[in-house]
Each structure stands twice: as structure tokens, then as C-alpha cells.
Amino acid sequence: MTATEHDRLAKCPSSAELIAELAREFPGFRLVSKRDSRFSLAIDRALKLLTFGAQRAYLTHYHTVIGNTLYTPDTWATTGELDRVVVLRHERIHLRQRRRYGPPLMAFLYLVPFFPLASPKVARGSSGRPTRRRCAPRPSSAASSARARRCSAPVS
Ligand SMILES: [Zn+2]
Image (spheres, rainbow, N blue to C red):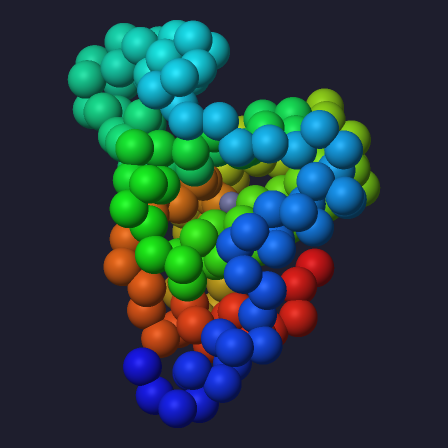
């Protein structure tokens, strides 16, 4: 980590502080391990069935916000502080989107990229890159300097 990245990280609230902020902003906000949630275990089984076993990482690598609960994967316990901060800031954006758009529209916007209506050619900008990306729960992984840079960027 460079000195600049270290300075930026020092300005970020800790994951514990972010969780407290989220609980104030979204009363009832909590973290629940997917392994301890019957609901998450049922989603995991459904995903395995629907994808013929291709989606096997729901419990182990994906963070999922449903309502005011952040369901955490097995990796949460060993996730580093910077990655926790990145995940919490990312999920806070989804919580704010849900508040702004309401649950039905948010669910629609979140799920539509799974079933794109336009052809891939139409969905790409002049750069050839997709103009809109699916924003699925991110697998947790090692911190990158790019993530560290985003930590100090304004959110929303
Ligand atoms: Zn997302």
C-alpha cells in the first residue's frame, strides 16, 4: 500500500463505524451470515437448481442485501478491513437506491440486466463497452489499489 492509499484509507470510516452509520440511516440494518439464514440456504438451493449447479458460490462468496439485512458469505469472517469497507459502501448505495426508487422498481432495475431486452450491439456504447453493467453482489476478494482509491471517492 502506498502512502497516498494509506492516507485515503485513514480518512475512511472503519467497517464497524460504517455498520453503525447504516443502522442509523436504515433502522433495522443488520448483518446475517448466510449459513445461519434458512432464507439464504433456500435461495442457494434454488440457484443451484435453476443454474444446473453452475451457481455454487452464493453462500461462499456473494454479499446480498435484502430489505435492511446484509447477508454475508462464508468469507466475511476472513475479509480484510478494506474489503469490508468497500462492500459496506457498495451495499449502502443499493440501500439508498431502494429508498429512492422503492422496492418494486429497485427489484426491476436490479434484475433486468439478467434478462437484457436489447441486443448486445444496442447495449454497447461507442467505446464498444457495455453502457450498463449488471451490478450483482460482488464476490469478496483481496483488496486492490483501485478499490482503495474508490474508498475516498464521493458516494451516491
Ligand atoms: Zn451491486
